[in-house]
Structures are given as structure tokens and as C-alpha cells.
Amino acid sequence: MKGTVETLKGIFSKRSTRYGINATLLTLLVLGIVVLIQVISARSSWRWDLTANRRYTLSDQSRKILQELRKPIQVTAFYREGETGRQRLQELLEQYTHHSKKIQFEFVDPDRNPAKTRRYEISSYGTTVVESNGKMERVSDPQEEEITNAILKVTKQGKKVVYFVEGHGEPDIEDSAEHGYSKAKKGIEKQLYETKKLLLMREEQVPADSSVVIVAGPRKDLLPDELAKLKAYISRGGSCLFLLDPYAAPALASWLEKYGIRAGQDIIVDLRSRIFGADYTMPVVSSYARHRITKEFKMASFFPLARSVNPSTPLPAGIDAQSLAKTGGDSWADADPNLLQKGEARFDEGKDRPGPVSMAVVATLNLKELPSELKADSVQKTSAAKGKEHARMVVFGNSAFASNSYLTLSGNEDLLLNTVSWLAEEEELISIRPKSTRGSPLILTAHQAQVIFWVPVVLLPLSALLMGISVLGRRRRPARPDFRVPKE
Image (cartoon, rainbow, N blue to C red):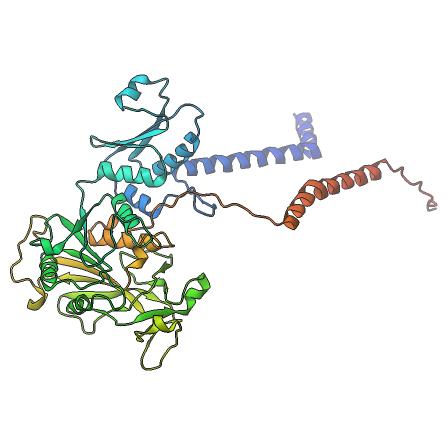
């Protein structure tokens, strides 16, 4: 027994044994950490998207819609094995399932599953089908925006109508020219609204199916009878969006003052717009109020040739209004009506109003508390308006920001669509819309290209080779003899 103990002591006293035990314990520790990480990641996971355009991150809008899902969604993608775009779509759908357990997806090879292909009436490869609650939508170009819209279509009940007032020189929603509103129409319809034109002078009242009425950039004033119809529409809980340009439609501007919204007789001048290569009459807005429309809205928006819009002080009874967007401190509201003819801008103390300048106002109207002058004499309540206690209004001091030329500039489109969604009382659609995935090419100068070639391709391998030769030379060098005299 004693000999065995001594043997074990001898074994454990060896350096090799201690190193072996330490290595074994370290290996077990590492394996334990790895297993613990796997267990934690299986229960909860985190993702970090470091790409410049957030390629592997769903937009705020998509995530909000997924969080609101109450019924399961089945996504079926008809792709062949190895087909172009299949891997990209799978990565995208995995992001959807990561944010909602209601989403399930599968890939089907049309050549190997002809029965299922015929049942879904698939006529081309790369078609994706989104279905829920007996509804089905086919997507031929499965990008995030299209898939999110398909999910909305199969889960949304009914379709709301957005009317564009015409007959006063407003931009045409069918016009694809630079001043037209065809892109705005397309963007609103992508939110699953129906858009229609409204000639108020021919109608007895605003149509009963209207969810939002938009008066965009009238060049002439609305007739008193038309304003009375809008007043009746608001009195029964309607929602209106007004886009007013400088010095245009003065009677409409005066009519809006009754609702606590004052459109200034001026033009906003912004010196900061020169930084972006724009004219000084295109104010840049990056300061937004804390409101559902602009919640988490961090993008700048541009408004070519805009006027100031402010809430009145004091506000009429029953109206809660606030500024929605303001320009920067380098701007002012210039009251000179001949500003554009002069071609120069100069701040006049006591005449012009210094910045920040409010150029958009949002208002909520409590219908029960409104003064009698703001209530229609006879309000014919529709089935859609029964039980409504509030009306909503938004006024912008510019209409060109929603035109084809400027809508896709920075945050303009998101601001417009967020406003329409809030007015339509569909606040779950308020967010930043999905952005298209695009590459960012890297353009190098001739000198930069030479540096990138010589450093990793020539200098680094050459340095490693020289270091290796140096080490090998040191090892092969014979040891020097020791000529020291031993001590006596």
C-alpha cells in the first residue's frame, strides 16, 4: 500500500502529469462554457447587424406588424434547389420568424411537388405565397416590403379610402411628371389604402367611406360651399391633411385659423440648406415633436418653398394642437413677398421671425367641446362615423415635398405616409418603411489600389519569409565554445 502511494506521489509530482491535469481541467472548463452559451442562446438570442444599410435587420414597420399578429401566417416559397435568390429569401424569412412565432415558412421545389404547385396555381419559379385566415397573396419579387405588404393584406380587414381634393390647381395623383403626385399615390396604396379623386363642388358631402381627405397644394381658393362640406366632415369625426404653399389659397388659410392653425404669409429661409447643395428656400427639418407621427423619426426632411405654420395662442375650446416639425436655428420666416424676385435673402429685425420656425401643425379636435361656430348645422352621421368623439387635422406649409421630385428624398415619404396612417387611425403602420437592399461600391484612387496590392500581397508575405529565414539561420548557427576557466 505504501509503495502504491509513493508511486502515485511520484506520478503526480512529475511536471508532465501536472501539465496534463491542467490541460484536462482547462478543456473541461472551456467545454462547460461552450455548453452554457449554447443553452443560453437556445432560449434567447441576440443579433447585431453591422452592415451599412442594415441589410439583415427588419424595418420598424415590419417588426411592429409582426408584434401585432394574432393569427398564424404560412409562407411557402416555390424555389428549386440552388436557385438564385433562395438563400437570400431564406435569410429574410428567418428574420421574420425571429420576431414572431406566428410566422412559419417552407421551401417547395415545383419540379418535385407538382400537385402542390398546381394547387397554388404557381406559373413561375421564385413565387412566394403568403396565406392566413383563408386569404392568400402571391409575391413575385420577395423583398421585405413586398412580404410585409402581403402579410398586411391577408390579415387586414377591409380597405380604407383616401380622397384627394381636386379642381383648384392641385397636383394630379395620376401625373408621373416631376410636379405630379403619382409616387405619393403609389406609396399610399402600398399601405393598402384605396386612393380616389374628390371634386367637392359636385358632391353633396364628403363621401361616407372617406378615411382621410387630402387638400394638397391648391392654387386657387376653395369655394365657401366646399369649405362648409369639409366643416361638416370634420364635425362627424373626419380626418384632413392640408398642404399649403406660400401666398396660395388665402381664404383656406383664414378658414384654418378658426381651428387654431395659423399659416403665415411668409417664406421660410434656411441657410443650412446650402450645406446639402440646395437653395436657401428649401428648409431642412430635423427637429420633430414627440408625437405618434414622428416617434423615433430621425431622418431629415426637405421642403422646397415653404411657409410657416403655427398653433394659435390661445387655442379654441376642444382643440389640442402642437407644432410637428421645425427648422433649425439658422432659418427664419421672411415676410417679404418679393423675396423670390429679388433673388437674395436677408433677415430684417422686427419684420421677419427668427428660427427655429414651425412649418407643420397636428391637431386633435374633441367634437363635444368644440365651439358652436365649428360645428356643422346638420351633421349626417354615417355608420363609419357613429360613436366618434374626435377628429384629426394636420397642416404642412408646403406641398412640393410630396411631389414626384422630392418624395423619395431622405425622410419625406416616411413623414407623409406616417401622417396618413395617423389620420386614418392606423397607428401600427407608423414607422420607417423598408428600404431597398443595395450595395455600396468602393471607389479607389490609383494610389490606394497600389497600396492595397503591395501591402497584403507583397510586403506582408515578404516580411514573414524574411523572419522565417532569420529564425532558421539562428537555429543552424553552431554553438560557441566556452573558454571560461573553471573556478578552483
